[in-house]
Length: 85
Image (cartoon, rainbow, N blue to C red; front, side, top):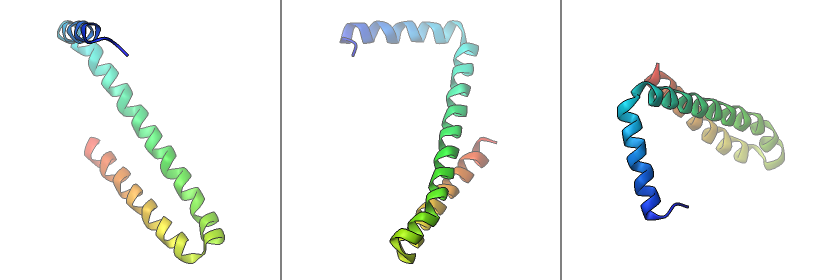
């Protein structure tokens, strides 16, 4: 955790760097977007992989509820991918 003075100085340096080299920050933002996409896709795959086990262990109702949650997640991923494409 930075002190208030250190945080203020860090923010100042960040603003100066952003103004001096905007391409650098654009590359960083792109890397973060790619990382978030990969994490979200991995989460979606993991959620879908668990649906059959929950359906067997928890019953049809639990499996159906969980499948609806996963469908919501899939719709969110689809909308994010469509919006950024």
